[in-house]
Image (cartoon, rainbow, N blue to C red; front, side, top):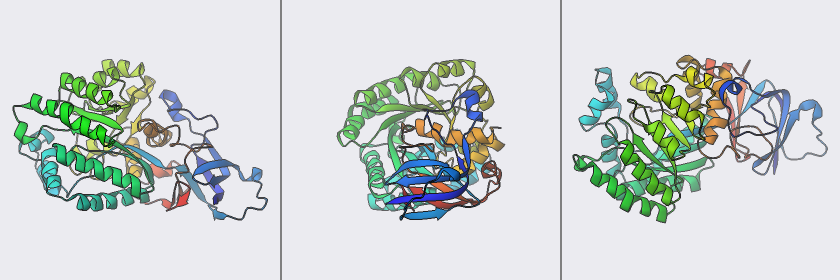
Length: 412
C-alpha cells in the first residue's frame, strides 16, 4: 500500500545525492522544498518534489493533505540508556543540595543505584517499563534510537538488559541499535579490584553477548573516576574481535584521553565531550568518528558546555542525542534537545536539524537508510502541526508541534 502526503508547506532536509553526514559550514545549509509532496511505497520513500510536478494519475491509496504543515525526517537519537528500572528523583534532590555527580556515585547512588533497582526487576517488568518509554519517544518524533546496557554490571543482569532491547527491536516499529556497556561503572563488590571486573567483561561477558547476537556496538565509560585509557583499549579490542564496533563515553568529567582512544579504534562515535580542546579537535578532524554531544545531561547536571562552535568552525560534524537515562537526562524528547542545541550551545536551527537527523543516523551506523528525505530511504518522517517556519521547531521549546508520526511507511 502506498501513502501520498500532499500540499506540504515545507519538506525539510531533502537530498537528491545523499551524504553520510553534514560537517562544518555545510551544517548551516539545509535543502527544503516549498508546496511539496512525498510519496511512500511499502516502507520506503519513493518520490518527492513540488506539487506542480505531481502526476496523480489513478492513485487510489491513502492521501494525507498537509496544507500549512511541514514534514521532517524522524529524529535519530544515537545515545540513550532508556532500558532501566524505576527512577532516581531522590538523587535529583541531592544535586539541588549541591552534591556533585561523583559525590553521589561514591555514596552508592548514580549508576550503582540503577544497577540495584534493575537487579530486583523481572525481565518482563523491565520490558514493560521500557516499552512505555519507547512509545513516548515515538510520539515525540524519534524514528531510530540506540539503547545501551550498563545498569546490570554483572553477567546475568547485562544479558537481561540486552534481551529486553532485542525484544523491543522485535515488537516495536522504531529502528533500534543495541550497545553493550558492561564498562559503565565498577560494581561495589569490585571496589579495589577494578582489573578483575575488566577481566570479567573481556573473558566472560563479551563472548556471551556475542554468542546470543545481542549487541551491535560496544561502549566504555572512559573518564575520570571510571575506566582508564588502558582498560578501555583492552575492552574495545575484545569487542572488536567479536564484531562489535566501538562507541565511547568520553571527556564528560575531565580530559580523559577517551576521544583519542575512540578515534584510534575507529569508534563510530565519541559522546559527551564537555572537555574538548585543540588536541581532541585535531584528532577528530582526521577520523570517521562522529562527535556526539548530549546537552540534556549537561543541562540537568549543571555542567560546562562543550566548545561546539569551535568544533564546527574546525570542520567537524556534530550529532546531538538525548542520553535518556534516569540519573542525568530523564527525557527522550529530541525536539527539546534541538532547543538546547540552539539555546545553550548557540547552534543554528539548520545545524541542530542536521545534528538530530542525518548526523545522528551516522552515529548509529544507519545514515544510508535514515536521517534525511531521500529516495530509497526508510520512510520514517513526521508531519508537524501548522507552524510558520522550520526555525520554529527549536524556538518553541516546550510546545508539542508534532501532528502525525510515520514509521516504516505506516501511520503510528
